[in-house]
View: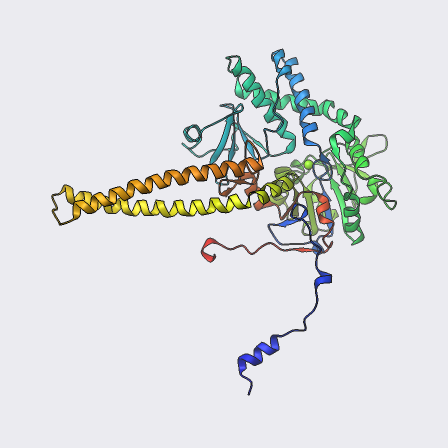
Length: 496
Ligand SMILES: [Mg+2]
């Protein structure tokens, strides 16, 4: 007779389907969509896109060069010395997620606990002791006016200018007014954006400043063909939106002669993050460039300006059916996540380099884990022996003459000295490995998303607020438009 267990086992056998043909094709790690929180595209009727650094990917070095030149010229016009024009500004210095300390003229990187782990004054790296003395004394209020949080790719050039000028002054034996200097840099770059210096230069030579992604038109089409409605929600004004979007996708596909054909709603000059928080009016832009109050629902082909979260999602049938794809961790992702129930996808163009560095560092990272494990073992051993040695020393001090006590104490002290030597050697080994790994990610700051064994503060924000993250919009292309992006099971440490 068949046992109950065998009967159950037999019942569980299902017809074996060959799913090979149905599987998502292999996608290289750099081009995958990574999931922090489950996201069903089948439930997203509307998919929105930011433009700058999301649909439009800029050539970072050319953009930084342009911003730096414009900023420095405006600083000199404001009375800063002429020699600023001849300085060498380090284009490769800044990354997102840095904090500018305007009071001391430092730039620092924090881990997710807001502990400062790396820092520079000009291009001089601050030592661990300096960082401890400056930043470990009390809780760092990174949102206070003393600090400026660098969270967009636009802002990298401000940091390059800041450190370049500080080094310039200090090489001349002078100390610049750090805080004033940084505020002036910010004002000058804002002015360069406002008065058209930056926008006009880009518009005059789009191929120099923009990377055209050949897979973007197909990606947008695939989503539309599956019945999704697409919208564009950008802070850029209409003239530059028009020029940039035309350059990126116009004429790429015969079924979409104009970029407007991809979108069911186009909202420019949206003023995010204000868009998510206040009820600014939605305007319709007329052919002559004037505006009038808009009436909803959105009409294809019309251009809208401003607006607000409530009106937009009411017109789209509710916020729970909307996914928004952006690159600005605060303006696009954190704000929309805090103020709405939109699902979020964060475009992180640094991700491809980050993954490449991670792959190259696998062996060293495994070696580092092993060194840290051994170090922890030695340290725990040290603490245990210290207690025993202290106990024996106290007894000996009180005249305890037990046989062998002093010999045992001498033996323990010898062991302690040997463990300390081992610890020093392991510390050195760990430091060397960390430096080697960091250098593969970024010569000044290491990984964008990690710091030490922890997430960086920037990495923690992505982890917390972006449902999914990807290096470019076209990474969506190989997936089904109804894809269920599943997050890995989230285990707490006691479950591992
Ligand atoms: Mg953007």
